[in-house]
Structures are given as C-alpha cells and as structure tokens.
Length: 252
Image (tube, rainbow, N blue to C red; front, side, top):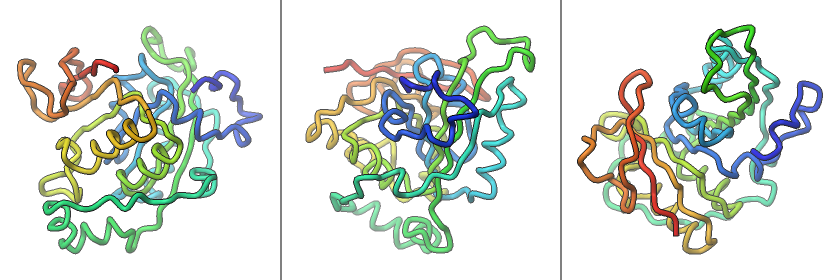
C-alpha cells in the first residue's frame, strides 16, 4: 500500500481504498486464521489479502482484533467492509468453465454448500496494524505497519471479482495447506490447468496485469524439484511453524 503511512486511528474509517490495498499485495486463498504469509513475506509487501469460505466471521473478527498483539502490534483500526466497497464498479463474472475434477468435487454436499454460500454469509473485514516497540524487544526485521483484508468467500471468485475486476494481479501468492484432498477445496490451487492459476493468466493476457512475482508454499517440494507452477524457480526456504518454500518468477 502506497498510502499506509498516512492511515491513523483518526482517519482509518475513511481510508479504505481497494486499488491501493490490492497493489503489490500478497494473496492467500484458503487462509483460515493463519498468518505465516505475513511473517514470511512482510519484507516484500505491507498489504495482505486473505480469503477463506470455511472459517466464520465469529472466528475471524476476534482473531484479527487480537492475533497480532502478542507479537508486538497495535491495532490502528478494524472495520466491516461492504460488497460495494470491495467491488465499487460491480462485478461481471467471466463464467469460466469447470473442469471434470471441479465438477466432481462440487457434487460433494459440504463442498457444494461452501461454494454456493449455503449456510454461510459472505463477509469482509479490514484492519491496519502498527508495530509498538514497547510491546516487543524484537523489532529487527519486523514490518512497521501492515494492512490485512480478510474476505469470507470463495477464493477464485474473489480473485476474479476483486483482482481481475481492477486489472491487478497480486505481487505474491501463498498456497499453504489448501485442503485439496480430504478438505473442502473444490479446485486445485497448485495445478496450472485449474481455476486459480488460469485466473491469474487470464488477467495477465487480457488486462496486462503482471503475473505474481513470488509464491510461498509448504506443499512438500524438495529444493531440487521444479515448482508446480511453470516459470517459478526456487528462491529459498524459511521457517514459520514448519518449513516453507519461496519461489520467484522471471518477470516479462
């Protein structure tokens, strides 16, 4: 976010700007209440967009309010974000087709219910945090200020509505334990032929949005194995409650 340093407790409620938040952001689908992307990628970005359709707002809101205090951050502000604020220019779906795997997964009742938001009301919260040196003696390497937008909804539809709708791709994508096997994910984030990667490619080809430069994952690759997404090469490993790998992509 270019304007994050201008946000204070006094002007927070009037400071939400979806384009500023999306620019050079980290996109984390199936995030739940995890924050490892913030820990591992805050040297690259100060704006994090989490999306999840499995964790209710009754869990997300108190987590956002209290989760970062223990690691030294003050909450500048937290607010509910309306659909109009997320997509002020409305949203016209591209109606991407499902592949065979996605169609089969959507036949499973609890996955279909998640996908179509049955018994689940979509929501969004936005918060900004500031490091307080008085709360922690370990400030070296910690980001001074960051934004977190959490959207309770389906990840690929959110990517389409919010990122593609604004002709922006994230700077980085985090794929950590995405629930693709026995979980409730209807698609496969790792497979470049599936919806998530294809949405990014669509935005790149149609809207000239740069492909994400970085990828963070815990999906079990050895350092010598190629990344599951094409044109991404191993960058380094980082430890955050288990080893994670960072990949980088040569930009066009």
